[in-house]
Each structure stands twice: as C-alpha cells, then as structure tokens.
Image 1 (cartoon, rainbow, N blue to C red):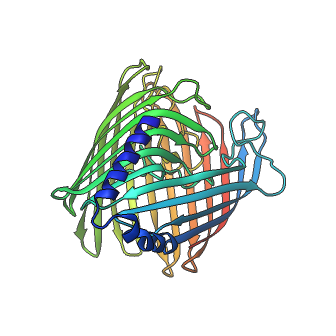
Image 2 (cartoon, rainbow, N blue to C red):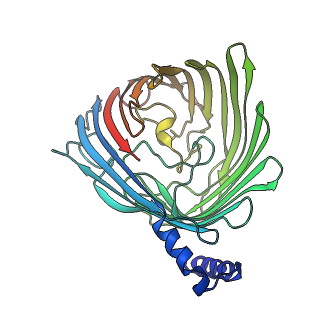
Length: 402
C-alpha cells in the first residue's frame, strides 16, 4: 500500500507543478479560497430495531442507536479537491442486542464505533476522468456485488485508488478500483488485494450493457474471517421502454464465479431476470435471482449491499452451500408526493436438492416531509421451512441531513 501511496503522491505533485501558473506565489490565494469555500455535510439518524426470533440459542433483541456522520469537501484547486468524513454510532439505553453472531442476543449489526469514514484526494483536471485516492464510498450498478451497505448505521467504505473515465469511448463509462481494505459495517477492517473493473455502454434508453470483472484476494488472519478468494466475471443488461402511460423495464444478468489466489472450489453461476411496469405513482416488479451452490460451496457477494437483496430479515447474507433461488414480487410507489411505500414477497428454495427454505414478506413506509428531514418504518417477516428459524424484524427511524 505504501508503494501505491508514494507513487500516487508523486503523480499528483507532478500534475500540480505542470498546471498553468501552479507556483506557490500565484496559487496560494486560490488554494486558500478552495479550502475555505467547500461544503459541509451532516447526517443524523436515530433508529429503533427489534428482532423476534424462534432460534432457541438467541434471545430477542431491541436496539436503539444513533448515527452521526459529519464531513467536509473542499472546493476545487487546479483540478484537485479533497474530502474527509467522520462517523460515530452509539446505542441509547440498554444494549439488548448482539452486533455479531457471537453474542447471546439476536444480531443487530450496529456496534458502537467511531471511525474515519472517508478521507480522500480527488483529481478531475483531465477531461472526463476522475482519479480518487484514499478511503471512499464505492457503489457499482445496483450494489449487488459492490456497495456501501447504507442501510446499516456504520457504512461500508474502501481504502482504494479508483479511476473513472466517462468520455474515453463514446457512450461508455469505465470504472476501475484497486482495493486494499474493506472497512465493514461492524467496525472491522478486512485487508485484501481487490481489482474491480466495470464497463458500461449506454446504447439507448432501451439498452444499457455492463461487463464486469471482480478479483478478490483476501489477506489471511482478517477479523472476521473473510470469505474465499474469488474471481467473478459477468454481464448485465437493463433498459426501459415507454408503454401506455408508463414504462416497461427489465434487468437481465449472468455471472460466473471461480476460485482465485489461495482458494479452491468449483465454479458457480449467478442469474437475474426482472420485469417491471410503472406509472408515475406506482410500479410493480417480478424477479428471479439464482446464486448457484453445489452443497460444498456457493456463489458469494461479500462486498455487496446485502440487505437490499433476498429479504430484509437478512437470513441470506451468506449464500447457503446448496445455493439460493429467490422468486420475488414487489409493488411500490408514492402518495401525496413525499410518502413512499413498498411491499415485497419472496419465495426461497435451494439450488441443489429440493429444500424449501421458506418465504418472506417485507413492507416499508417513508415520509420525506422536509428536504432535510425524513421518517420511516419497516417490517420483515421470514417464515422458515427447511432453513433457519422464523424471524420478525421491525424498524422505525428519523433522519436529518444536509
């Protein structure tokens, strides 16, 4: 990591010195103005979460937590800017929950923590290109493979060097990141050597194509133990077509995951098919997702925003060894302009064998009654069959941000 840091600092210094009029005497006032003329951000979220489980080894959980996120991004100077953001999570009252599976209570993955959430330097002085170095938020596509897990109080960020090229090729955006650390939602670091390449081609509103390759080589001795090293290669197609008063949308995706670096396992496939139709106030979606498994290992997505997929009860954060088939139906929309609602049902089955894992019903209401203030409530009920235990989760929160 030190070699990459020194090389990048040398590059940045060279670019700065080569910029027109970039000597200290000429640029000092402009640099000061950039430092003083940035923008601050503040995010406060107070949340109650309860977990009712039939697992005899766990007690039901209640968690009241508050998340404070405070940051500052400078103005631009010779194509450079920088950002820093701190994040703190604290419980209020009794801590009747376990932040990790090791405790006696059911898991609420919001441990008390204080950390540097983001700290980066960015360069945009080359047309259509963004270079970013440091601790940063990375979200690719729908966050199924790489995300920030924004639902949890402690956000997931990455120590990385990232490059985005938006104009290198017509209608094409190229994203690459080299990762050295995943800073997880439970306030631990997972060292790795990770290469993320994501190339999207916006042919038309009816068709956007994405090709990607994600290589993850986890360091040994990480806490908690990282998943196996893996190579994931895939293709994704999305689009929307005007139809009547609304739009018909779709998403199709296929990926193959194989062993990489120190790992050894048989390869597994991933498939997604979604069809939906929406008018301005309401929309429906039918989807099918497959994460392959052979009974010994399964397709895993350790950097994903996992809460957004396979049910909000979070019973499938790690894919079972026999794989997972998820058939889901979703309806949602807005009422009174700022009141959002969503209902989603899931049916879960094994990929290998005939196990019927269970089913789940999820529901959510959100109300953004001010530009800076919102409230929400959420419900998840997992009805177990051949996997895990009946679980009900509820949430209520209020969030202020600017």
